[in-house]
Image (cartoon, rainbow, N blue to C red; front, side, top):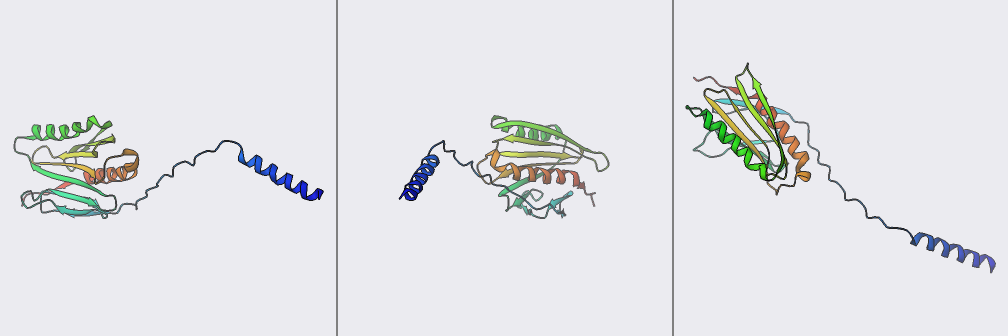
Length: 191
């Protein structure tokens, strides 16, 4: 009987000790998004430029009226990069101003906008890359030009409501692709 009482007392003691103390909520699980290493292929357009795109992206013409405007669609990232081409006809100042103003429209929601100039004298490609942080609609924008004949601008948008913490891995992936696109642009010579 003594052994039974000791066993019951021992079990009650263990139960009492395990019931006390604080309970801590489990931390929220963080989704780890990983994307494959990019493989770049040349996107040869019927326009005055060629560039390289990630093979994950699908190059789609926007419409017949603007035959040199394209969307780079990233189904896996639920995102698009809008690429627009403009011929320069004594309007470089207004094209630059429009591209810069488009980026500044995101200042309201952005935590910051970092500018990274791009200069490639050999290929005559000059431009600016804008990295937008925060809950802005677009996380990256750019423009490139030869300063004489050609002007290209682009913006990255996600198909979801912007939540910077959630889209950060995808935004970084797109930003790297956009920078590669800028670095790979070559102007075609007129036939």
